[in-house]
Image (cartoon, rainbow, N blue to C red; front, side, top):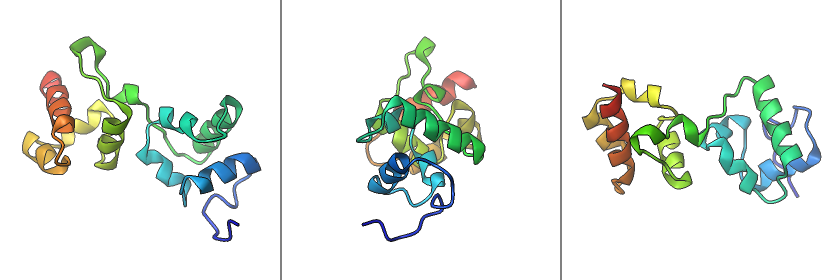
Length: 129
């Protein structure tokens, strides 16, 4: 069923976790960086024990998983839902500190046509300055 080899085929893990990763299209553990860690619990058959196994393996492999909370700024009313968070992660913004590398003009060009992401990133950047 899963004939293709992936970079995690040689890492010790439960068959449940390996099947979850394959079923969700992950060819490498590095691909997990594109998602907030809160997203993984939504995968079919991913329970708390398997989720903890995933976190431990990522830590052992030097893969830092980020959280939605790395972007949210509740004090200033800036909140990212899962989809906006994934969009931000895909363009390389995984924490508030990442915003320092970009000007507002660069951020606007990087954001997809849906400007909700840019509006939130702009507010965060303005707060930091």
